[in-house]
Image (spheres, rainbow, N blue to C red):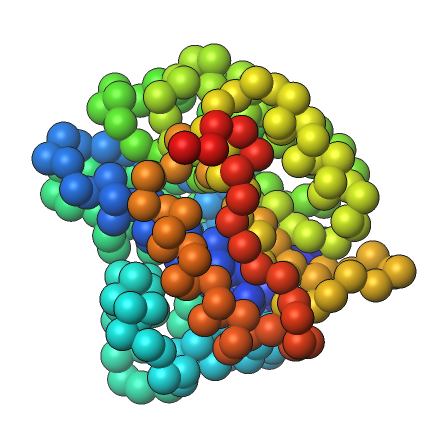
Length: 283
């Protein structure tokens, strides 16, 4: 997969990932105490969909584009409103030119006392991200390997919050690194919420990944999957998942409302799968 996220900005996987992110942040805001979001692979934060890279793939036309135009049921619209409001604010003049990355979505949803630690290893991308949030005292941008942050930056001083782990999946061992990183992080901060994004491309690799996660013994793991195509013999990018450790107690029910709507709007084939299931710790 291409690490330069601008090629994929606003696609179906981004939509699902950022909706889940927004729902978790909104849940954290229910309590008065401040919290921190740690984004381990933050990217550049904001993407221009009219750029040459985004236009080359046009993946947003199968993601945020049709979702913005969809006539959503009231119960669906209410749940996705925080996320869609961030997108709409960026495009206040009409049309769809800009799409927010995860640090941008997070920052727009934070309260005054909440904090964001945005971590990005790529020097150029990190510099862009620092410029975007220059002068924002609620955001700390660090040029750092996100995997290292799972040890050095946990637990946060607020003792509340979430860790978003969204690696580029450029190397074959990324699933193994996700499991190892999660185990390391959970030992340091067992009460934190963790959201791990992963692609659904090689079904056997995804099944093994889920088995490895279940074998860790970490309790309360909710696996959210959204596939726009049915499996075929050849490996292809058919969907994505979000593995959430210590999820908000309402998240499973919210996904039961949101995922069918996303399937109707964004799926390319009939009977594509979307659902949320517990790997461990079903209530």
